[in-house]
Amino acid sequence: MDEWYLLRSKPRQELRAVENLERQGFTAYCPMLQKKKARTEPLFPGYLFLQHEAFEDNPDYGKVRSTRGVMTFVRFGDEFAKVPEELLEGVRHQEESLKDCPAFVEGQIVEFADGPFSEIQAVYLCERGEERSVVLLNVLNREQRMVVRTDNLRKQS
Image 1 (cartoon, rainbow, N blue to C red):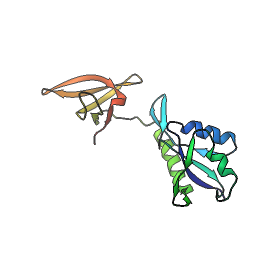
Image 2: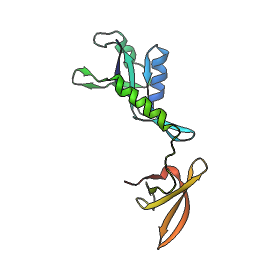
Image 3: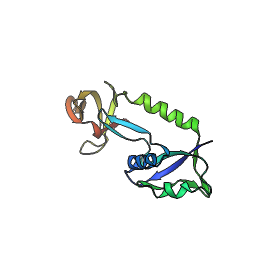
Image 4: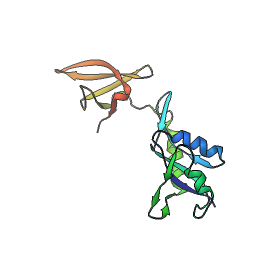
């Protein structure tokens, strides 16, 4: 029975690695997280999953290792890191359920990730286009509406 193995990809080459592995006939999987409507990024940057039979003394080991975008297999000592099928099914389920889920909801407390307002809290009001959001910021005891880049907001920690 084929098992899932954890691979390390070269930086920001997860999708390239998956594409090249699939061209060679392997089953590869890289869970994606939808950041905004038109943009996705890997859920686990630098990692992907490969389904295959045991790799001990297997000639496909070299093929996988030399695939563009693949850095190496993840190992624990001499053992290849194997990932249970049930775990990947859970990841796939989460990946599907997050596709249409908005990053923030109206009234949610958010904070700025960087810049002059770094770590200052605001109240999320609404989305303004693809990349901007409207927040309510308390400045000198007055609430001010601000239009900011959505990628500069994060959930309150």
